[in-house]
Image (tube, rainbow, N blue to C red; front, side, top):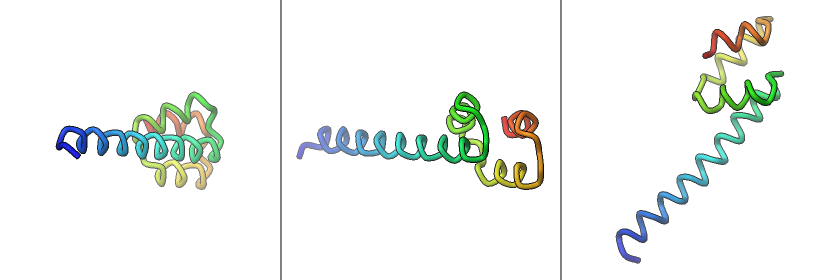
Length: 70
């Protein structure tokens, strides 16, 4: 495989993996109770999922948690 073909294949593999990670993160935020739009925003911003879990676990209301996390 030529270097440019290898690089393209690697890029595509990383894109597929990034998409899978993004979908998983969005699912995790949805499971915490955030709506679809908020979950997509939080997932895309690379917000700390553990911090979100901690806020929710400690009783932080979702709208306030959303503001804190962003």
